[in-house]
Image (cartoon, rainbow, N blue to C red; front, side):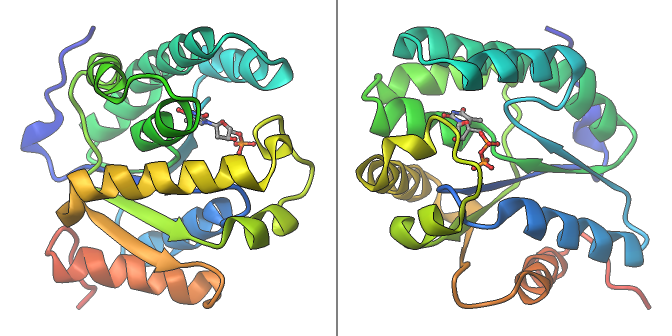
Length: 214
Ligand code: TYD
């Protein structure tokens, strides 16, 4: 795996996590627009996907059900590709990477919801990301039942129903409990995307990770 030299630069990954229908993609677009207004370069990407080969792997994963281990390795394979093709180059250009789902989705879905061993997934996540962790994980929390009602065009994970989504949500809460200081939890059913985006950007300014425009 390519070794990253990005650590000296002020660039970092923000992951956006949540159960289905939590509104991540709209929020990411809004955050990207606000960063742009502040003159802060960023890219918007997603997992699984975010590079040509990783998008092909995404289609494989989403089109049919498979053994949970196969599923896990495909997510990690897509991630390794995404990291090298898209994330590391953006970090090296000094950009903030806004990523729709990342390693915590694997813990929540394949770990807590599918029941694969949590600590082994952490090891695989670390290998696939060359140890790069999100500086911030924005968790869009929503009642899974409300989220499922909002989600259009259900994928096979959504089709597993509300009980599965509740397990996924518990998985996110478990991952958050392990690194509480790098998580920002927002209730996505109460506020609109532009207001949520302001909260994310204000958090970055308060932490001094980005500068407020003079
Ligand atoms: P997608 O249609 O992008 O769902 P969403 O819009 O809710 O993000 O499909 C991605 C699916 O893949 C989603 O159901 C969550 C699942 N997933 C995992 O199970 N493990 C992972 O590591 C990742 C990144 C996603």
